[in-house]
Image (tube, rainbow, N blue to C red; front, side):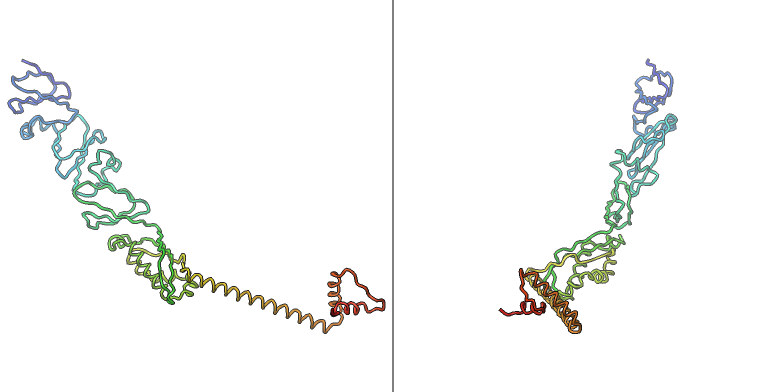
Length: 366
């Protein structure tokens, strides 16, 4: 005969002929002939040595165990002393009562959203990687949520966690900041059939995420095409000269034209304008010739104005000297002085009339 010693916080099961014969607690016992003894540490999970249908017939054992049954659509999170221990998936689990401070939280993973009660810090742990999917929406973004390809709602910036289940989850993001669209190299015809290329810029901002992403497909491409058409219409109504003179006014006209259409795309156009007007070589040459001609004409006008002003000044001076003999004499002496500066030596007779003699000298014909 053999004696069996069961220590504190141990349980022994006596199995004989495929049946549970006894549950042994702390103490000294005589081992029955032909029986198999299974010892269990009460600080660890219980792993059934027999089919549960057999063990459940023993009321003593069932009262000592806490049974956790996890369905196919469930996860159970195990905590010990308020600390995470393990994730229990589909199956049956058993733990000894009255030894450890344990608790279990059950979650239905058929539901999409993870309850707030489950710590967001905890579900970022590697143990949850196979059961949780996460999506981050940046502070400047909003997103449309699709569940099984059906529109489900609008998500603000933040991190979102969902169970990994049979449902498909997709996010379509958009930037809520002011954005720039560059429409470059548009080949257009003016009303007078002048061919040119235009570089055009506009800024816009998304105002209605649902309209932009759900009710419209590729709203950015649609906005680009819309601006091309509006620009083509605007340029086609103006001659080349009118376009060049009024290109700063394009913003007002374009904004007025696209207002409602942009609203239908879920956006608002904030500003628009022509950045560059690129003319073909022959048109540019003609424009340069026109510009040169204009500048020459302006220069001629300025020259004629100066000549007219000079003539008017001389006329006024002549009138003054005609009316004032003394002024005439002073002017006469001034010119004599200027002429004399360029002559080395002058001989005059002594019979007076010096000014008259000088006049005769300077006015003498060769």
